[in-house]
Structures are given as structure tokens and as C-alpha cells.
Image: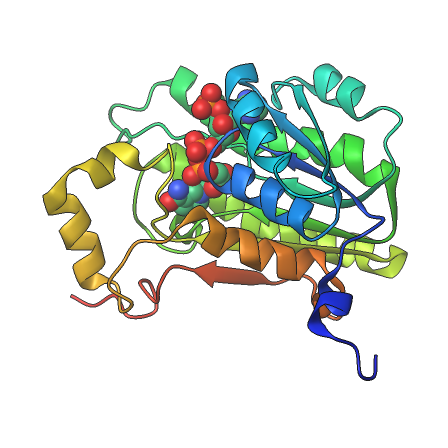
Length: 254
Ligand code: NAP
């Protein structure tokens, strides 16, 4: 495109996006940023109250096209029902949970619960959303820095590593059909999921002290990468992952 202003290139006007986990944190920021870029957004979350807070924020955007629905992404029939009748251009899989347990203390129930949301939940959304996608389309999956390295907790880390490989596989399967699939891997981002660990000054200082940019991230830091992957700025980008961690895992040393 020649002589296009940035706003022309990044505009998502006329595009329909679905964002899971949109009641909080990264999903909420993504839903609001995509709304600001002109997309029509369907926000999904398990919590009705959290979603209504997201809706109140999104509806402050002038000319916002935004609606919301409560759904548990681990329930395939509920996901399929909420997406029926949709024609989607952008799919953001963000709904996630964590079980902060070692292998010894992770029960089979914990394992199934975490994988049921973080992996099968993403699968359920993909199964229902991808056949309803327009071409070109873009899928963005939230993995984690923990999917790249041997840290954190077994069920969570396994689910996030699986999202990296699933996204690469789907990029190969759907690239010829005009659907791009990428992931983003946040480092330590200030959200509901991390508020307990970040409320301890020692733990926060330990993390920021080892992070080259000397801070934790905001949900918007991740949402801006999601915006890039959703937009025409990334039309030749698929099968890749963007780390958004302030440089943390690239510089970890003993
Ligand atoms: P968050 O603030 O807790 O947001 C996650 C949202 O997903 C919450 O609103 C949560 O609702 C919802 N959710 C949970 N289970 C669900 C289900 N079964 N169906 C539908 N919605 C469900 O956490 P976040 O940090 O934004 O996490 C978003 C994604 O980023 C997750 O996939 C997470 O693993 C990933 N991530 C986060 C960080 C970080 O530092 N924050 C780092 C790397 C990756 P409830 O609150 O009611 O459970």
C-alpha cells in the first residue's frame, strides 16, 4: 500500500473478532484495543460480572461495536452455541487458569482442569470458530513465556508449550486457505492471574531485577502485539510466536 497513513493500515473496520477470557487482564485489554481499532468485538468469559465491567470500558470507545456473552470454553456445546451465526475475521484465545502446584501436589483433577481450559478450551474455540472464519483471517493464541522454558508448574507449563506447537501446526494446515495462526508469549504481566505473586514486594523485585526492562508488563503490552497480528501489518506472518517479556527469558543466567 502506498502513502497509506498508519491508521489506514491498522484499521480493523468491518472485521468481526471474538476474544475469550475477555472479562479480565490480557483478554479484556485485547477486546478493548480491537474495539478501538474499529473491529466489531464479541467478548466471551466465564464470569458475567467481569464481562459487564469489560463492556462498560469498551462502550466508552466512540462508535464501539461490542457485545459480550458468558461461556465456559471447556464446554464444547456451549462454545458452539455462542458462536453460531458468526462470520469471524479474528479469533483470540486467551481464557486461561493456573494451578500453582508442583508435580507432587498436582492432582489428576488439577491437571484435567488446567488442560481442560488452557488446551481443550482453545481447541473447542478453534473447532467452532475456524469453520466460521472469513478469508483472510487471523487466529492469535495466548501461550506464555513458561511454554518456552522449564519454570512454573507442570499442568500450566505443559498447556502453554502445547499451544506453541498447536499454533505452528495449524499455521501449516490453514495457511493455504488464507487463515494465519500465531501465538504470543507474555512474561510477567500484571493481571488477576499474577496479582498474588506481584503483591509480594520481594517476589516483584526478584522478577523486575532480572528483567532487562526492569518492570512487569501491562495487559496492553500484550494487546498491542495481538492488534499487530490481527491487522494487515502482519499479512506475511504465520506460524510464529512473539515473546512479550521485557527481555526476561532471553537473558536468564545463573
Ligand atoms: P486473568 O486476568 O485471570 O484472565 C483470564 C480470564 O479467563 C478471566 O476472566 C477468567 O475468569 C477467564 N476464564 C477462566 N476460565 C475460563 C473458562 N473456562 N471459560 C471462559 N473464561 C474463563 O489472566 P490473564 O493473565 O489475563 O490471562 C490471559 C491469558 O494469558 C491466559 O491464557 C494466561 O495463561 C496467559 N498468560 C498470562 C500471563 C501473565 O503474566 N498474566 C503470562 C503468560 C501467559 P475467572 O477470573 O472467573 O477465572
